[in-house]
Image 1 (cartoon, rainbow, N blue to C red):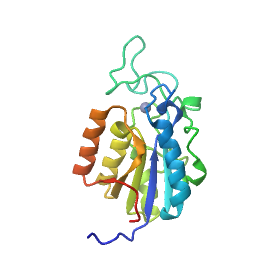
Image 2: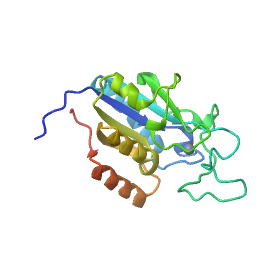
Image 3: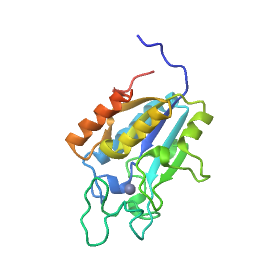
Image 4: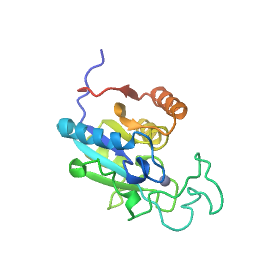
Length: 202
Ligand SMILES: [Zn+2]
């Protein structure tokens, strides 16, 4: 058995936003359910976390945001180019309505004028990056949840491992765009040393 970790743990909620749940411009099936499940998780287990951070994709309303949005008149490839989404200060960039953000300590934004998938590319209102905020709180382990498993959650988990954090991806608290890419992403996360599985006390 592994020795239980004693380092403080953080929860990182990735991009649970209106445009990434059903009805949004890049809506993911199961997105609304993830928002509500994260709310329930926090209601039950907030005390397990030294810090709760939430990221939002936050793009400029004009231009392609560094090629992240498909050029007008061209089709997005849904790999590197996407339909417009999460325009800053508009409804689509809001947190999804099912997510209760009362327990969120740190609000992060990413993607202003550029592609940004990982929450570790995001900054808070004072320009502080997630890795620095976690270290300042003494955090050694993170639980990652959110949308989409095969894109921004994947990038966040892999960056968390690169930054040296222990990582769990919690069952039932994330949703992917497509089954094949989601399975591939889960495999990459495990290969990088992340644990994927149900919630349980560390
Ligand atoms: Zn984006």
